Image 1 (cartoon, helix red, strand yellow):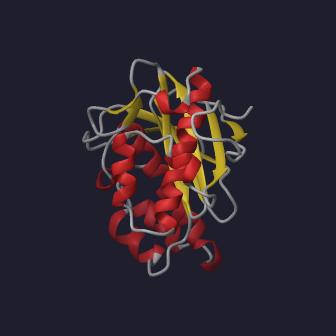
Image 2 (cartoon, one colour):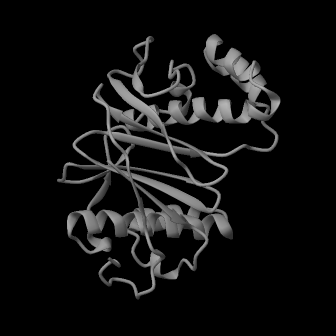
Length: 227
């Protein structure tokens, strides 16, 4: 399982040219400015990386939306998940196991103790509340990213992740309510500075993340991706 980190604050033109009509429509729906530019870079780079894995030009990577709304590569066993945090992104790529990645940083206006007390499991809320003040955001984000990674691997919705018993350390997670069928192996991974990150793969088998990095585009649209 490979984890690619890459920057988003780059000129978007070369990346925008790689997007398919559905991605372009979503790009146009973004508020103008930094968020729109970052969307183009994130999804253009996603195509460059997937194209390099498949031996295809990035614009020809056959992406589609799966049954539960999760993006997937049509006709291939390759699975992927994309997350971003400010000016950095994380792309997880795996063969034949559904994958979810999440990347988060502290958010202004959100109280991690109050949020955890309302939405998380009691033992998880206590873990956040009992942490030292300087550590509360870190404890909260470890739980949040693990929950989000699991629900993204399952192709579910955010609300379904909040009560998942994700604990800490590498282990298998299952939804005791049965709303999300199956199980996922989840673990924390190294994210960009200031961000917490987690990865979940379908099933109960452990995984070994392989960190990767991607060089910014320096060539014209439609060219082969850089080595």
